Length: 173
Image (cartoon, rainbow, N blue to C red):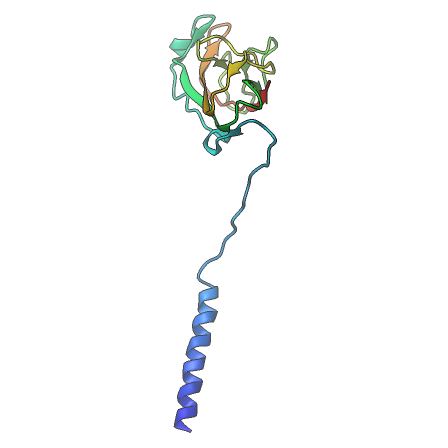
């Protein structure tokens, strides 16, 4: 009888531990990716980036065409097989001004008379919705260098948020 009680007590203890373990926390793991037929893959750390343009004084953007200091960003392409394609182009898509040069921010509390300009590695404007100049792929890894800055096309920028978003598409030729 005593032996049966001990076995029952041990079994109850083990089962109660299992019951408590179920309540110790839970969660969800999401897996995200894409299978591509391309000469390179976009590095995971390049797919969703945040470029901090920082705080910029309105006096920096008071004159037409004035710009804040540019902040660099890059798109890394990995596992590049240059026997398949030799060149790469990137197209940035987002909410742009009338001539397609600048990304605009239309959220509540946004700064006015200022937008975000995108620039290639030489500092030339990148037009939103238009492919960049072709760059030569390198075997293995190719890094594409860009920058962004606040631009006041007409001058007189007002205080507010300076946020923007752009999607990019990579094409090979």
